[in-house]
Image (tube, rainbow, N blue to C red; front, side, top):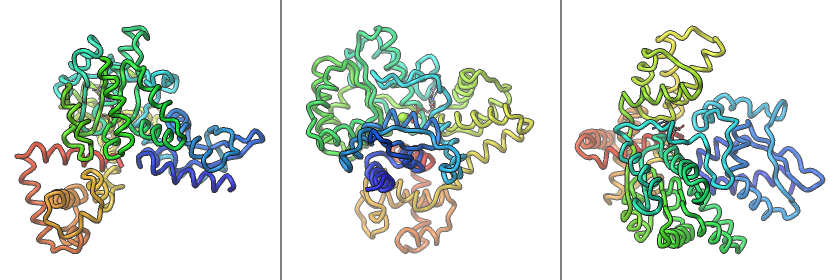
Length: 455
Ligand code: ADP
Ligand code: MG
């Protein structure tokens, strides 16, 4: 196999193992550069962020896939693509850079701690507390004071970009600081846990995984919803969980939804979670958004007038990550003196950032996200079924096609399995009416919308 084929095959396998947004952001435009005399392969990535990210998060997985395809490969190294090789990548770079900066703002001097996996930028001093997250924050403080005793497990849930990762990594960093490394902390995105289990099963090294996790004092698992439905990983996680829990070790978990709403999560895991402390983070109100904007500006050694901060807080409501992306953009414009930053211009910058996220969304993406959320297939959404597990997702899809994309009712009917336009109208009206009365439904819709915007 030549290195191009080898890398393409590796990518198709990787694509199955990591989430789609991660794959697109970090790996889509990668390519092999060379195989040197030592038998190492050099992989080119589009920018420094991608390089750091892939090295830290995916290296092991990549290496084990490549080795399983070609035993002669001795190692994998990464570089940033420049010049001619990068022509194609350059086109997507603009868009990608924005995305990267949003999810991983510029703190190049700070590195992920290999021991704990924690990123030092997530600390509790820079975490703004307000009504949308005060319960979660209070619980976090209690956990730090009484590690493993009071709130165990501590389960935190909420929509995308609302600070879950920041808070749980912040707890980890604080414990490290307060207890001066006497307490062993480990942060693991659940995707990574799943990958490790898959790798270990393949290579018959399950004992490695077991011993790696069982001597930890604080285990932090991010985005647990990804474990749901992956049997061996769930099984392994359950045993790890029990072993730690019974020894009084602290477990901290985040998820995009409450335990009861992860349909494929095994019952015994779910009931374990319900036995601990559960707190949610929701969307920040206006005052909190202003406070976050000011904190972020300060971190970047920057400032904007109160009026402008208010303007941004007014326009960007959904997601704190989005606020960060927009601030980066405004600072960029200012530093490069592209334009005079009047309120009107800032308004335009924000509108175009927000619109852009809508412009890139297609009806099939909406359908795909809804299906993923309810853990059914996109074609389940279009079949003629009256089962509750199908009817609700179908009505929500039709509602969102109208609400987000503004599709016409006949068009929606057509998309949803050649249904009559009156069905689309009925679904839209039913969900619009219910959304105000039913908190469960409105939570679901908020989460799904966030997943769609994150695509
Ligand atoms: P989630 O894990 O819930 O998707 P993140 O923790 O990744 O969200 O947060 C997204 C971005 O918003 C991060 O850059 C984070 O620092 C920032 N952020 C979120 N909540 C807060 C907060 N309360 N105070 C300060 N920054 C926050
Ligand atoms: Mg997160």
